Image (tube, rainbow, N blue to C red):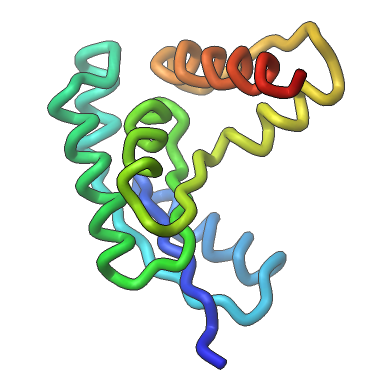
Length: 138
């Protein structure tokens, strides 16, 4: 049986070893690969938001991960959340936002949730995700 393949899409090369370590520690029998484009987060920071052009590039990277053989794709940047969700509608494999599990856990624990982020560009996308996950939880 062929091992499943997890494709990571990163906006910083510094995340590659961290996610490889986590994968090795918590997931057995899985192959991984990484697509890294740090110009994405640099553009988001410079412009203060995810622009349509940059979102299209994110979608392209996620589609490239599927074309490269990923059975599951994990995008590891919260600032590009809306582009990740758009890409998920265009792929035939699961596409996961890195902050989705955190948002789901938060809405199960409390109805008062704060968002703290390392980048200002993460606040709106993650806050929006938390609100939507809360509304869909019930």
